Image 1: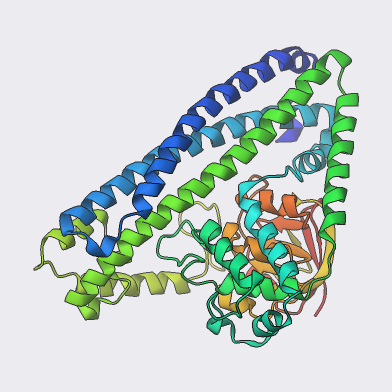
Image 2 (image 1 turned 180 degrees about the vertical axis):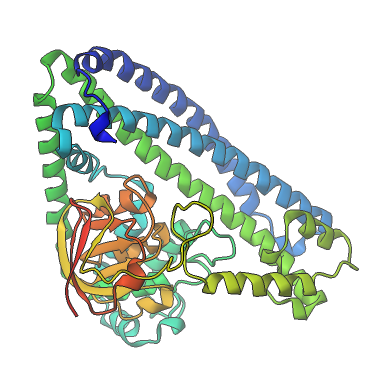
Length: 456
């Protein structure tokens, strides 16, 4: 396609840049005012929802709580999507600028300019857990417990009393609404199942990486990239470039912050769902304790109001269908007609390609994780390979030498977090979990978007 698209002069782009950036800066100001109002509303709703015990509600009360959560999700999602739309538009302008002044090096510039943004909400849990690991080193009995106990037996109350236990309690109070596959309300949150939290803590206790030097390197690379970019544009345009970078960084932080609110609301949905499932289980044990996750909202409401409503057979049929679908290989991202045969089959090539997400080159042994329980003995320096990475996996990112995912892009939540952590990453590597094997020695290049298998 590039061969048939004529190159256009950059003069028009540069002439329009100040006006374009000013427009986005104004939009950022208006959106920030809207978000400030929303934050007050959200804080009030969060406080109200957290004060409700669903177990004590009559069916009408539980239905009303469900409706309130639906409304809160609509409001929160609307604000987040507005921020995301503004981010995408500003990123298009930034990418246009980078392509104009840096050509093929523009993508690398982008990753450096948007690394180490500081105070990114989705990156906070990983940093907080790393600090707790450093705190634990002063309490040998806590370290021994975390290192030797079965991961499934580790809970905050099971730890010896002290600073580490108190810090973990606060951690789960602040971030317990997050979890692996956190956009799926059927998936448990860290507050319910802290397996991943303790797995990451165990890895951090064995990791000697100096995060301070890593952070300083990030900041230095970002400042150097920004300096190069400004020198490459005419002097009168440099203030506009500074403003554009500020807008993109602000929208990025804003989007990650609001995503956290969306996940919190999904956790509220889960509270209502679990209570509904408890009531179904009391009425129809054969439906299973997770019955509600196989019902539509309309069916949930019928169950709440009609004690004679029976759903067990329907739930069992849908659960079987879900399990069959889970066992199938993932279809390709795009195809015409039916998925081609062999979809989901791993590559035999020694060189895999994906999308560059976080700068740097890393070598290490592959560790494929499909479930938090697989991370019990995740070793610092291993290359973490997952089908899809979200904030729920983030505590392990800091212990990994690199990360490879089958899904995602440079603007995905995981990519943003990985750039904050300065962990090299390649995302969108088709069938990575099938093409790679535990223990494979690989070199991943987070600038080129490649993964090279060096040996077994």
